[in-house]
Image (cartoon, rainbow over all chains, first blue to last red):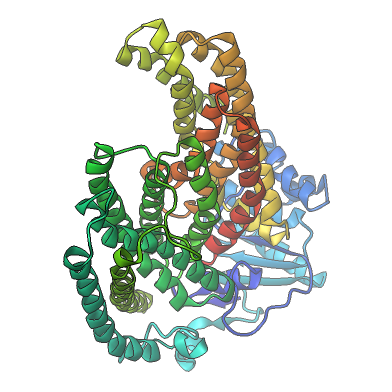
Amino acid sequence: MITGANGIGKSSLLRLLAGFLKPFLGQIERLGRLAFADEALALDRHMSLQQALAYWAALDGFSGAEKDAMRIMALDKLAESPVRLLSTGQRKRAVLARLLASRAAIWLLDEPANGLDKASIMALLRMIEKHRDKGGVVLAVSHQGLDMADYATLSLEDFRSKNNHQSVFFDFDDESAAF
Amino acid sequence: MIRLANPHYFLSLSRKLTPWLAIAGILFSLSGILGGLFLTPPDYLQGETVRILYIHVPTAWLAMGGWSSIALASLVQFIWRHPLAGIAAKAMALPGALFTGLCLLTGSIWGRPTWGTWWEWDGRLTSVLVLFFLYLGYIALSRSVSNYSTTSRLPALYALLGAINLPIIHYSVLWWRTLHQGQSINLTHSSIDPSLLWPLPLTLIGFSCLFAVITLFRMRYLLAHAQYEARLRRMAAL
Amino acid sequence: MIGAAVFLPILFFLLVAVLFPFAVGSDRMILSRTGSGVLWVAALLASLLPIDRLVTPDIENGFFDHYAARNISEEWIAVARIIAHWLSFAVPLMVALLPASMLLSLDWSVFWKSEAGFLLATPGLAALGVMIAALTARVKAGSALTALLLLPLAVPLLIFGCGAVDGHQPGAFLLLAASSLFLLAVAPFVIGAALRVGQEG
């Protein structure tokens, strides 16, 4: 669990770990299949929920895995509804269902609890616990922090104050430059 | 390379270089233009109008050379992620477009007495016109991209795409219509009399120096702007 | 890319074929002499219309992030996207060429030559469209910028395409095919690079 205020770089850190951003220094090694869930839906608005999730499950090589995942996220009644008609909370659950169906070892979660009601948050916590017990890795970033006392938590605010932030390659921040 | 990436080093170098380049540019351009206007004999075919050549040819050379330099700098930025190369490429777009516009203008003025019309759909002039639009597209793209990132490599991609397409565009336009007099200067021999030719290298060097001066000024502006953006971003992050 | 949105560029294309006679008069001689060129320009302009929808919505929706997390290379996505764009834009356009040619009283021989020219030019045009779409995907660009970026690069397609229909110039079909093939060949790499570079923010 990684916490910190808005704009401090939590999502950037997650994107760095996912391999979307290249680090200026150092290397990032990925030791397993990776799946992530963030604010973006990435499901075809015109497909039914089942079809849209099946697309990603098929890409991951686990056709049919979406059915179990939808049951766990309590989405099985919505299987035939088109994605564009889902509510915010239902969309969030659909994104988490895709994460489950991917059967990846590493989970990267960006604000996973946003938009979820109490019952769904409980389901999410159970899902995370189960994944951890199976030996999976979960990395979540959140501005508020989930109610999870027994998880390792790192606050980026502490980290940042200790390591004075600097652009490494190109010193745009240098106030003494004369033009 | 790494040393040049340090903006302190680059800025102190460019501050020293700019006045010398400006003086050299003005001196060479003036002597070339004055020599071309008063000291060379008129051409036996085109008479006095040929004197516009001393401006037209250097601008055409800088129009082409400008895009090649942008493409080269973009390649450096693209492969080695050298941010200063990206800023150099962006900075060269303005003088490049300026000299391309001057090339079109002088070509059009030259065309009036020679062809009897301000605009002739001749192969070379038309492909310079397309190049002019490529410059404008590149400038527009790098401006809108810099709204979200000062070091983005997207404009570099467009510069490279344009560079590999330029020969095709050029030959398609030539194939479409060739009315222009054949290429009169090449590296091995020249069909222009040497007594006419001597001011040309002077304006060529002079205009190139002026191109470099504008580029250095633009780079300093873009660096200052990038620093300003970085400060705004830092303040927003606090 | 569902439903009516696919047909809007095609309707635009047909609308130009309707407007042109209003502007120059209904003289069949003038129309049949200039008509094929007008249709080429109309096709180029129509190709600008779908560009906003080719890449941007999928980036905003996060599709490309999920492809990247699955190690699916951007180049292959680009190939798929070009084929999809060609099917949804160029094929209806080539169908619409028939009524458009009739509106401008083109000869049958000119119609078939234009059809062959469209068949050769549209893969390159589709590749160019997706390239510009990928380059401007994260920029609030507007259609003026996409036009400014795309049209200069489409000049060879226009020149060789119209040259092929004229029939005065030998080898125009080959040159048209070559320049279209060239755009197709570079497109996956440009699009792949643009998508990755864009992700850096």
